[in-house]
Image (cartoon, rainbow, N blue to C red):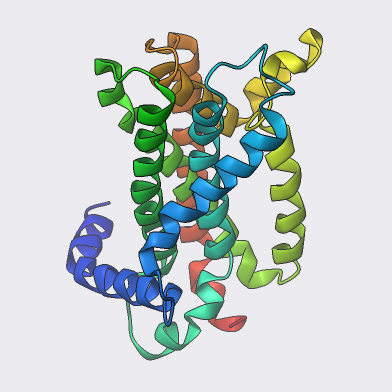
Length: 258
């Protein structure tokens, strides 16, 4: 444990450099650059609101905010994990030439997407201002669902980046999984649209838990239930532990496959 912490501190500057590299690469020759991180969720919110707000207007107040609270967290998770899946393969040149903790490349993809999430929160705050959703003191707890999502995402990313080295078809399979996961998470529809006997199954979906906590704080100005907080924390801690275990157990085999 001490060695892992010491390695992280030692190579933290390297992590910052590859994060900056990945951000520059992402917006290379882009006219609007980082502004796309604001425009993308804004445009999607407008489109989704136009399509679905009338359908669910009786069950969802402040539909744009409802959608943004969900899609910002989900997009962070799906974007980070999909990119982390090939992070070892894409950076195989670094892995072969110099020694750095291999998980740094996985953390880099998550960090880049976290920057996007940070700027996207400006869209959420702006939309709250425009739609008249009150700014309450409960907003200071927004970091809680964000941190839980980040921890869960790190764990899942470590697992995917590990098995992405050994099974190249995982990229295609995970893409299908993310599409299904999107529709199984109440991002643009209310969970009340699901038959009551099946709603309990939604609590098996970690992203549903994090999104629900986010909406409680932003839309309802209420502290989420202890059950939701404990369940969300459990999912995050367990996923992170699994990710660390899987990655550490298999990382020495990467050179045989990349």
